[in-house]
Length: 419
Image 1 (tube, helix red, strand yellow):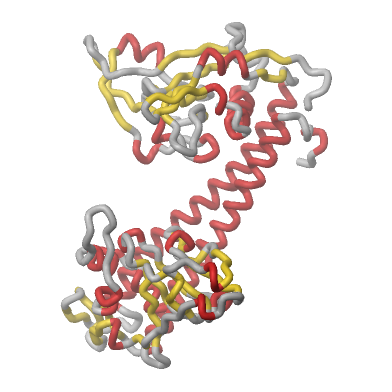
Image 2 (cartoon, rainbow, N blue to C red; image 1 turned 180 degrees about the vertical axis):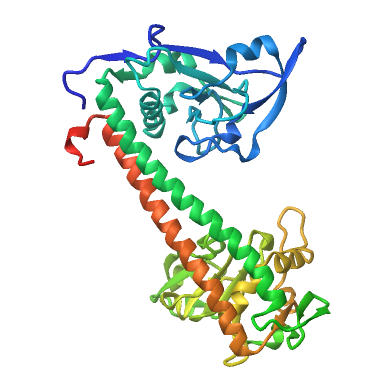
């Protein structure tokens, strides 16, 4: 904890001022402005500008509510079943006229000689992440509302020296910048791979002329085949027949549609295994979720899951030796074209699904096994780069949250850190 330090509450008009958000204007003159909404609150207090709304607001009201760099926007109404209300974002958008919605409020530091605005932001971010807004909210019809007056009284801010605040801001900002750098790599790699998949699966690697087929343009030497012509039969097995044997079970939620991999599993004794634990998977199988297939829950089976079980909600595809490269098949199943086509076959309004046979009847472009291997390898390298960036981002996010907590509670002082 901070030692020999004075504190002030957020509800101190000497240091801070507050303003409620804007509604759509009723009286002219109007002005069209960008508005920060709850949906623009992204992780770790960043503003997501990819989906900014514009509304007509009263010019007079906007003049009091125009955001400037260093302002903090707090969510006062919203949240969700597992998300308390009270998130904050730091405004640092350089261009454009911005305000904030009626479900939010603005916090502005008016004595910046005493408080660094970004230090206050980080302090409020830690207050939220520590779960301290949980007891400061009320729920009405599923929406959480922050008791803002109580919030302002509850937040006690340490009055640290300006240099110490700046050093804390420097440390946390550097970690955030590193996170953003990894996010940029992830975004760029994703976009590059999407463009490269389109090129490789329609033009191939050898620069040969194209021909038009029922699944679009492909190189002239390629064939078009149904998946079922190229894969082997797989087995089902009842784990209850070995009641005391421990099994690993992969269900639909075990597969990430961000990394397109198995990210977790459940352990069961055979006698306790779920009824859906019937399909046996082997190393290098490709599994495709037939429940909500457009969500792209596709994964390769790694050696740790060899001879284990997946849900019957997966179609298990096992390639024949020298007939189909499993990496090539896996990558093609991730193309927008394949997902769109399989999506046309799903049925069921509330629980859309396809059958295993629907997946196996799908047609794919079929080059030589050598060219399949090369295409699969190229795309796999991009997957590796993206996975590495995702891993680094997770580590940095964990570091940020840890440093935020320790610095904002005084458990670590900047004098204890090497810059």
